[in-house]
Image 1 (cartoon, rainbow, N blue to C red):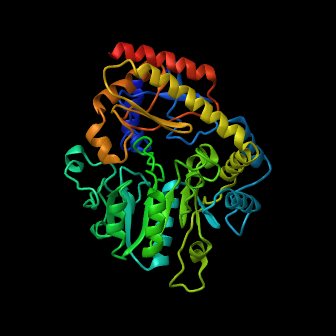
Image 2: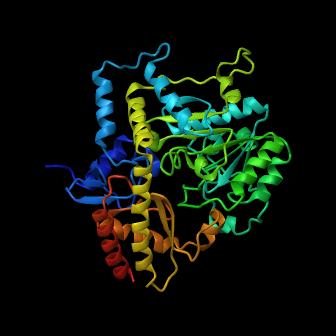
Image 3: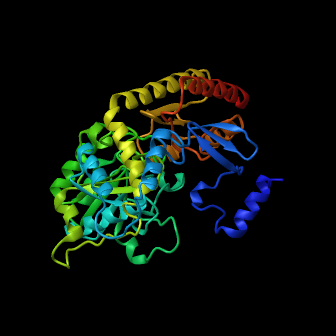
Length: 439
């Protein structure tokens, strides 16, 4: 007889520190998911869920996509292996594809995760500029490394007293960060050009890093002129502009969100959708910066290393994913936009009849339902205006009804190419029932 969810959770907590292999996966009430395919998840009881969490959004084509998995299986059967010496041809194949696809990549390095890619991008920026300080965004997420684990989502009491145009005092979100790093991190609000100007104009900032669309806290889009303004300030102050496209990359456009915005960063990072769920990260950018990885001057050389960088299995998945986007670009993104618009229309019709405010924010296949009366411009706006209690109650009720959105207020949801019109329509019907029941 299989163990119950409670027994499984107890066993996990006994042997796994924190109970999950990534602490931000923990959910309440606990669920024991055992299988995923296409647009669906199954729990240990055999119940199927429509999946809009998609493992924090890497599954652009859906879980266990046949084209991607076939490429991986072929790579394994071909004898491709982790050789760990010299360069393997599949690495160059993928690098060439990514340079062709992404405006901001002239050269690149591969990593195993987005967090590693971000860490290396910041190291490159510090070496390139000779400066130590970095600027990050309140409400953003750029991985779990020391330089970016600050001020992810300050509570309403803190942000409510914050004046626009100024920086926040760094507040670590994890123990174990050396105090000296606190002194090198500056935190500002997204979409606040005045704050960026005030901090960067001092001339001591190595890099400013941001998600070009703030997707850690839903879908917060750049205001007109914001990304262009950052580009101008960075050019003027000698600051490296880094777009963290781990979530936006390849989900919204083949060239990343930078292609949509028409703003080219100095460095950019990718992960998640680049390999449709296989573990691979990318850090790339201007040749003059990336070349530091092998600079002849050892004092300028920026070391990057990783036993699994360019692993043939993950590279095969990425090559299959990027090739598919290149060959069927309009078909893929057109279908994702159509499905996203269909879901949005259905949701907006449902919530138009409620006596409380909601706003459906969407960028292509990524979306969030905010429980507030307008689309937010930054984290301060969300912290002060979103009804988190109603948001969380809605998400948990949807899970119990068979639609899985991650049960944390304002978290982004995603549509994959595996979703069908029928999936979307059934989701809308279930949502209508849940909303009526919640009142």
